[in-house]
Length: 352
Image (cartoon, rainbow, N blue to C red; front, top):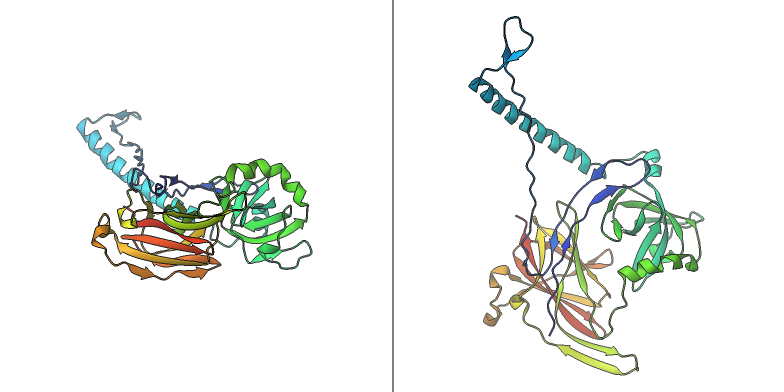
């Protein structure tokens, strides 16, 4: 019997990359997975400082000011309230302008300034990083426009380990480790390189990737975009049936029982504002995915044998996706592979 997930929090910060970029856009998203907090979201709050600018009135001919006692206190209060309102309005305008930084149309000069050069390094089953002096180590959301060294359009599958790529985009990178660059618009191979050139980054690969245990089914991360940022949540795994071949070449079958998802003591939280699409990232892509949801009011009531609602799981952009997910439900997702199947669970929670 294994525990259904561990508690994690994902805080992601956007930073602007590119020559001369000095503005930092912070968009914190807290994705809380299964843990002792059970989805309790902690939000820090900061009080806004205010400036009391009330002043006394001067005498008939004196340039200095004279305190008017209690009348001055009222002036201070009114001045402070007005200043806070003005500060809040300026903050809202600045935040709106900052959020539009990544969306506005850029000139060719700006695109060139934001471009970064990095080496492409694939690893494992479909994993990859880009590494370069300017932007460090990061993963990329591949655009439709990818070109080889001769200017021919290619697919991401045609990129080769060791390729040095010039990457154009909005310049905003998620500061996780590795970083994530979702706003890429174009890639161009500027140097073909050699696979051996990537060996200098093997220590980085070793930090972020471990060969999966063949005796266990793949893991599942859920990714979605809410009003704050892109959020990735690690789900817990329930029961599974799995067949694998050990190092001696012998076939082994494992059956692991687990409680019904409604009775899980720890379950991953998907904290959302409203309707979102959930993209399912398995560490090894299954052949088929099924999903059933239950009203969250049924938590702890598996003994009543409630009937869940079967939910459609479709492929979008090559990834299994559950569309139109709303708060208030417990999901059981089943991945099906040639050598077995496994259950995963999470609950959708309305952001407070």
